[in-house]
Amino acid sequence: MSPKITFRPALFAAVLLAASPAAAFELHSPDFTDKAPIPERNVLAGFGCAGANRSPALSWTEPPAGTRSLAVTIYDPDAPTGSGWWHWVVFNLPAATRGLPAGAGDPAKNGLPAGAVQSRTDFGTSGYGGPCPPQGDKPHRYVVTVHALKVESLPLPADASGAMVGFNLNAASLGKATLTARYGR
Image (cartoon, rainbow, N blue to C red; front, side):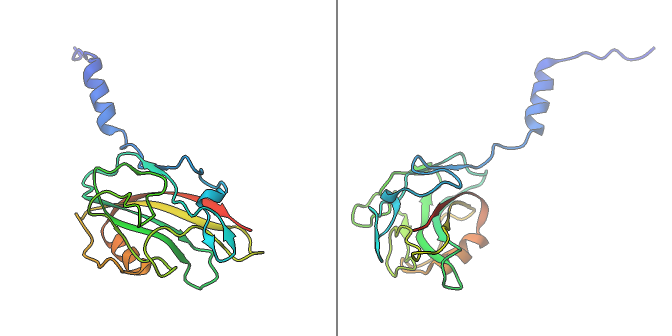
């Protein structure tokens, strides 16, 4: 005689949920989507560009378990420098942060959560600096990334370079979400 097998829907559902992968960590912006052009409101006002230099609004989903702080970066790997160009570097965002409003990158407006640090960009100053690739270049890629970190804060000075912050972000990473927009002129 074979044993009787009883189907239990609640137990079956619990096993399926436990076996399913965690929700993806995703980044979104109402200002532009992945692979889309960056609007003029987010473009630099300088170096021959006439944008509004407003940092984009960003939002993200629940970060990976164990996240203790977050960071946001915008990087142009196509800049003709040999090392790319850091357009925005923000770290020590509280782990509960789920987005930044448009214009948060203006250091004069104090639009970031308490404790967050806007570090030095490749423009030589802190705060957001929008795209402005050389005229005639193919459109550049602007990689917007939110980093989930396993540390409560990065022990870096406020004037740390984008490369120094990037090194520390990679060392403390639990995961990241990106979108890549484009801009050319």
